[in-house]
Image (cartoon, rainbow, N blue to C red):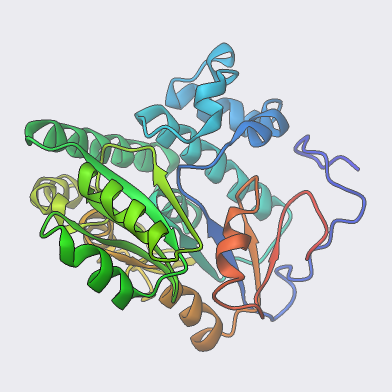
Length: 318
C-alpha cells in the first residue's frame, strides 16, 4: 500500500493512537550515531525530504555517500542528515494523524523534537544545530585535549564512579543515563578509552567507543554555554503545538525556556531513563512512535519500561 506522500507502507501497519482517540501518545526521536541509509532510500522521492535536503545543502549524489549514510562519524553533515530525516518522519506521522501529545528527542534529536513540537521552523532548527556544532568544534580544537565518548552496559552508576572514574581523576563524567545499567560517558579521549577497557575487565556486558571528538552533554563544554545561550536568546520560539520534554529532567519545554534547555543540554548530563519514566508514570503514555530507521529508540526503551509499546512507520507494532 502506498501513502499519499509516496512512502510505501507494509500491509500489516497499525496505528492505534490517531488524533481521534484519547490515549496519550509519544514521539521518540534519535540523534546521530545510527545509520540512516534505509531512511534515505525510502524518502528520496518524498517532496518534503527533497526540499529539506536542498535547504540543508545536500545534493542527490552526496546523499548516496556511504560514510554520510552510516551516521557513525560525528560531522556537521551527519548532524544535518539526522535532522532532515527525523523532521520529515515527524511530518509523515502528522500526515497520518498520529497523536503527538509528547515528543522526546534523544541527544541531538532535541533539534528535530522542537521542530516536531512546533517551537520553530525547519530553517531555524538547522541554523541552531549548525551554530552548536561550530561552537563545540572551535572550543574543542582550542584545548590541548582530544575528547571522546563511550557506551557502557552492565555496570551501575556507583560502579562506574568507584571502579572507573576514581582512577583517572577529572576530565571525564557520565553524559547520558540510559538506565540503571546503561550509560554514556564523555571526557578526555585517553581517559574514556581507559574506562572502557577497565569496564570490560570489570564485567560490563558491553562497551563501545563512540566516533566523536566532542564530549557532548558534559560540563567539559561549559565554556560554550554563554555564547550559545546568547545566540539562542536572539531567536523567537513559538508556543508548542506538541509538548517536548526536556532531555535533562522530563519537564515540559515552553516557548519561554526553550533557549535555555537547548543550551544546557549540550553541557549537562541527560537523563533519558527519567524522561521515559515521566512519560509513562506522569503522563500515562503507553504507546510511542519512533522516527529511527533501525529501532534504536525501541532498544533503549525496552530496558527502562517494557510496558511502553514502540511503533514504527513501516511495520506492525511489537
